[in-house]
Length: 186
Image (cartoon, rainbow, N blue to C red; front, side, top):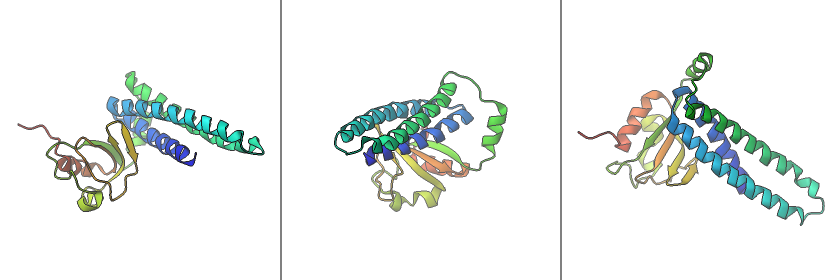
């Protein structure tokens, strides 16, 4: 159960960050990613509910599981709220100027970069690449196919097609894109 709850927490945190970024930059691709994550959190919520019910029949006092139920539901509520923010972007509703001003005062942004076929970092670990020190971007999520790898460690091996989500200064995005080698060819 702890693993499911941890994944729910991680995904809901990620969804909040991505939804605000999608709203700030009016980025439908990131908003759609939030909606995909919402489906995953919904499934995890269902699985967690089943686990709690199974456990309830095996404990002396099932009320002891209420806090677990409340935490699960609160995490689902956070994920739902993030998807509502993303939905604003998908429907084309512009963010209020005050929101945009408040968000622009942060010096860090979220970037999304796809690893292309000729990238020099394919088959290498983050540690070998020294990714964070070279780019200043902290990779907090990798999307590989339909899988989401939250907070990949230094021994994570980069593969072609991986989509890296990173947090850092705008100047590091260009460096990350160069390493990914996904620029249009002439």
